[in-house]
Image (cartoon, rainbow, N blue to C red; front, side):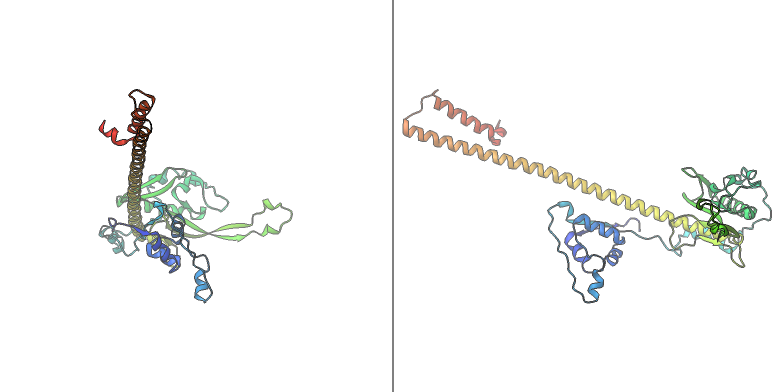
Length: 376
């Protein structure tokens, strides 16, 4: 659940014992983090951990050395705070809301059919068709004119018309379900569909076969003029979801021997819905972890501030005690001096140098004494 705490505090000495009791990869998995992250935590706290090959040597009976844990007086290095990560939900775990949206796509209630001709093209395509009448290709043989890259379309001229009919049908189907198609602005425009507020990028590609060029051994051409490979279009198309989230979910639907991508549009929409749910869950998890980190940082700063205030108060106390002790020592000394002087020379005359010095010395004691300042 997103509301449960995802951070755990481990005393420094306990973490030291744990990293020397089992391999870092296994221990890190228990905390839901990577072994690289665990190693960084250990280095930050000054905790030594086994080097590469340690556990292999130990298993084979070779002599290994466990590095000692050196003491640390730094208050910030007495415990480790580990933020546990939860993996994305597997594909089978979908919410009831998503299941309700998926059901019509699976039962064939709204089977998507790709027409033989491009009729009433979608607005994202209609303005590009003029440039696509004489398409230009890149060095890989894929069409780049008409801004197809913005639409995540990468096909050869021979597959262009088929690709346009497929993607146009998909655009209309998504909008009929209430989902918004967006060309996200940025350093490079890219097509996505917003599902429950999550931008999910997708595209259509053709597979190209790479073949070696025959002129590679042609010494009449300079090396930079030679093309090592040529790229031949295969006519095989694939629809893909371009998102890093949703691990374990199907993200590619390709032409097969008997089934073409045209017959997979309903399944593709189901895939979009599942990935959108996984992406949303992952975003909410990361936001919750960020809030937990911010709260932990706030508590750490508050504790540091409290510690500094306490240290400042303690320093003032120590200084007051030192000044009070100095004042007390001065008064004791002045009393002893006066008694010694009288014993040797008799009474001290008022206004004499000795009398003035005694008055001055007592004033100095009063200036030092913090208790006198309280009374004043």
